[in-house]
Length: 540
Ligand SMILES: Cc1cc2nc3c(=O)[nH]c(=O)nc-3n(C[C@H](O)[C@H](O)[C@H](O)COP(=O)(O)OP(=O)(O)OC[C@H]3O[C@@H](n4cnc5c(N)ncnc54)[C@H](O)[C@@H]3O)c2cc1C
Picture (cartoon, rainbow, N blue to C red):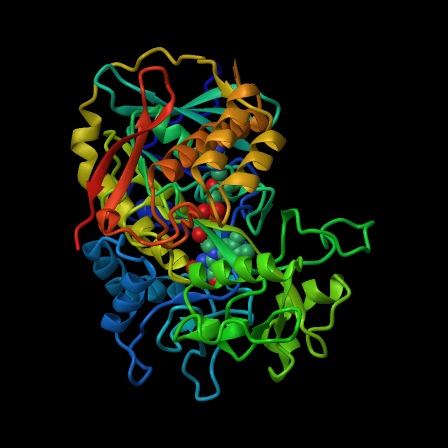
C-alpha cells in the first residue's frame, strides 16, 4: 500500500462541508497539524445546497429566546432528543455563528440593519438567518473554503476514505484511502474525525448530492463504533416535482428521481400554502401550525393526501409572496428551469429523502466509542435531532460540534499519542449490492409508511444480490456503505414497532409509550452484519 500522505499529522478530517472545515480550521488554530481529505471537489457535499438558513437565537428578536428554540427542538424530536444535547448545542449557536461571520460568511441584512430572519416548520419564531436569499449553504461553504485557503489548510481532494487503521488496542492510528485512479494509501494520525455527511442516496429520490452515501457511518461501524436512530430518515415535504432539471434533454414532467431541487420550507414560512388537486388547503386542522408544522407531520400529510386523491404531487401556492424571485432566487431558477413560474402558478411538489437524523453515536464533543475516532455533522448522532430534525438545526450542529470536536482532539492528545503499534492494514472483502437494487428496495419499503412485511422483503431483496467484494474505487466504497446502511436502516425500522417522528409504520400507526424515550443502537455482529445491539434510554 502506497503512503500518499507521509507527513506526521495530528488529525485527519474526512469531509470538507460545514462540520469538517469548521473542525479543521479550529484544530489548526489550536495548533494541531491537520489534513482534510474529501472524495470530491472541496465544495461538494450537502452544505453548499442548504437553502433555508441557520436556526440561531442571537437575542435581538423580541419574544424569542434560547429556551424557546430548545423547546421547539425538543417538540420536533418527538421525545427522542437528548435534552442535554439540545440545550448545550443550541446555547452555543450564537457564538458559533459569530465565529462563522468572523471567518467571512455574510448573511442577509433586514431593513432595520439587523440580520434578516425567516421562519421554518416547527419554529415558534422568526429565527433562521439566511444568505443570498435561499443560498445559505453556498455562502457558508464559500466562506469556510476561503478561510481554509487563507490558512493554507492541506486539502486532499479526490480521495475517498475507506477504513480506519487501528492499533493493537483498537485505537485509531490512521485512515486508508483510495485516490481517483483507485490507488490506495494510508494517512497516519492519532485522530480521525468523520465529517462525511448523510445517506440520502439510499433512496431513489433525494435532495442530497451524490456524495451522501453514508460512507462515514459504514466506516465507523466497521471500526467498532455504534450508530443510533438510523430509522429516522427525514423526508423533506416539498421537493420540486417536475422533469429532471439536472438533465439537459427531458422536457416532460416525470416522477422525481435522482437528486431533486428543494423548495425550502422558508417559502411556507413566508406565506405559501399547500393545496391538494382540488385546490383545498389540506394542512388546516392537521396541526396547530398548519403548513408550518414540523417536517414529519407535513411529509406524512402529503403522503396521505397523495394516497387518498391518487395524485402524483400536491401544489405549493407561493403566488402571494412579494418579490419571490429576489427572495428565493435558487427556488425560482429551479422552477423556471422546469417550466414553472412560481410567481403565477402553484409549484408541484412531493416529499423526498432529505436528512439522516441518526448516525454514529458520539458524545457532545464528537467522541465515538473508539479511541481516536470522532464524528461531527450529519454523519453523527449527538441526540440533538431525536426522531425528527427541526429545520435549519443541522448547519448549526455542524458549526457547534465541529468546533467542539477540534477541542476534544486537543484535550485527548496525550492519551491518543500513547497508542501501540499499528496493525497491518487489511484489505477486507465487504458485502456489496448493486446501488440501483438498494435504492429501489429502500424507496419501496423504507420511505414514509413502512410495515414489517415490506421491510423484511426489502432486506431479502438486498441480501439476494449481495456478494462479498473488495472496493477498488470510490463507487465501490460508496456501494459498500449503501449496502451496510440499507441493512442497518431496515433492521432498526423493523425493530421499532410504532410510528414516531420521521419513522411512520402503517402496521403500527400510533406512538407507543413503550418506545417513548428509547433509542435503538446498531452495531455489527461477529459476521459483520448490522444488528440492533441495544435499546438505550434517552435522557429527558
Ligand atoms: C438541498 C438541501 C437543503 C438543506 N437546507 C438546509 C438548511 O437550510 N439549513 C440547515 O441547517 N440544513 C440544511 N440542509 C442540511 C445540511 O445542509 C447538512 O446536514 C449539512 O450541510 C451537512 O454538513 P456536513 O459537514 O455534515 O456534511 P456535508 O456538507 O454533506 O459534507 C460531507 C463531506 O464529506 C465528504 N465525504 C463523504 N464521504 C467521504 C469519503 N468516504 N471520503 C472522503 N470524503 C467523503 C464529501 O465529499 C463532503 O466534502 C440541507 C440539505 C440539503 C441537501
